[in-house]
Image 1 (spheres, rainbow, N blue to C red):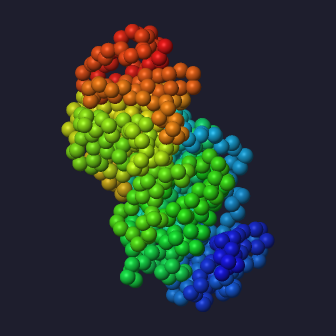
Image 2: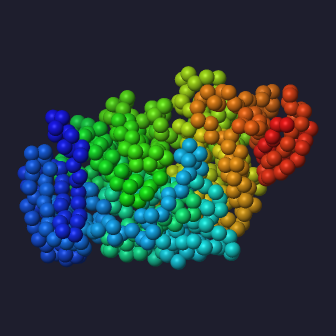
Image 3: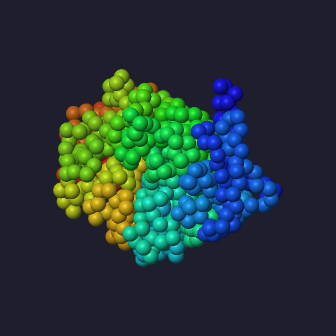
Length: 612
């Protein structure tokens, strides 16, 4: 058994290409016969058929002599024709796997280009869908909604930067992309710029090692999507930003007729009473806890990290991917790049047969070296996700202790006993993501006055940027992007999901303040504490203040700081704290340099002082 396991762990499945020979392998112990179908083009019906040979380890293999570049292949199993789940290139809409030479998919300079070092422990993350960046005409991009358009430099709306230049100007370190690996719920042959309803977030995955063709200029050319995505990555890297991929290994779009299930029925999916279990809420759960399910996930992650120079991964419904698989993936990925950022959603949609102790629920990440989204801080900030409930920033000040705990990385105000986070670096701090109401729409639904939305949005960002942990926000939050009240825009048209860059011009004052906040976070270096002990030693809250005020001190490397947030709608005067005769006010919703002997703080304001 050990010999078999070791062989299967090490064997390279899928296509291995050289100009002299192409070898294709697939593991299928329950199959007696698999036919390899070879096509000269993506659309011809004529094909050559080759009977694959099965070895003692249940791996079918066939080697095609000669240079097969440009050809396409599938597997015929009984009367079902399926695509190789290990395929890394395909024709449009995942119809046929493609034989390509990956060396020829590299844009000029891609292999040599330098990956920027953005410390994973100091990440500032913006989340976006590739198409959202450039699909709106206000983006000024030439290839709207595509990899090339969303990485085009120099785009502007009325002289205000858009796209990649905007993200660079904003100062984020990591750009988190909603799924860009192959999915089935858009027609790759209908460009979004011409068919605005042909949109999806991409959580309906098919070929995990292949890139989504709807973002490419030529979906039937297998090289196009790969080369153009590499161009996208290279441009962001050369502008100093790291790329995080949103990966969806918890389920597949198809169930019974998926390539995995046709090749090896009822192996790659969890079953309950003979039926597909549905912890994902999407019809199935991928069985990461099987040897070959785990191998596929780890192989896929390592392939993406190496081939595309990916800097991080975000796991969708991470609770459904067992902890052993995630820990193995973390180990292998950090052998490739010790600075790879790893985080995910510590929940599932419905119940799962996966053993609870194997589920990555809140708390399971403690001391494991990866982060999870923090729903406690999120809900304390804004209230519920889609309803009218309010949080601290809308005036429900009884959340103050929850907010204070979020500020210190959610390690617990008194001690860590019973807390869900062992250290601040495990906490992704956020007030919205692509799911649910975008922040502006949430504020509207919770009856915040239009005249106060800009101030409250600023204060939400101020909380994220002055808290321990890893700040995360959605693209366009910095200038009041909305989605017309749509709380689940996964397949809404482009006019709902596309970023309206005119809002940046309209709310440029807010954008500027947030940009400066991000710059200040980086500059001060006091918001990236790594351990609970550091938090206890360096941060102290100041008590006996109104519930709308939060004040705390942080010890830095050379200087100590006082931070005061006023979440109320009126100015406040605070008696000078003990042992603070004189302060240097360095931030008052913008950079400032003023020595003060009294503390006055305006409404909806964050003041940061250097203690003299």
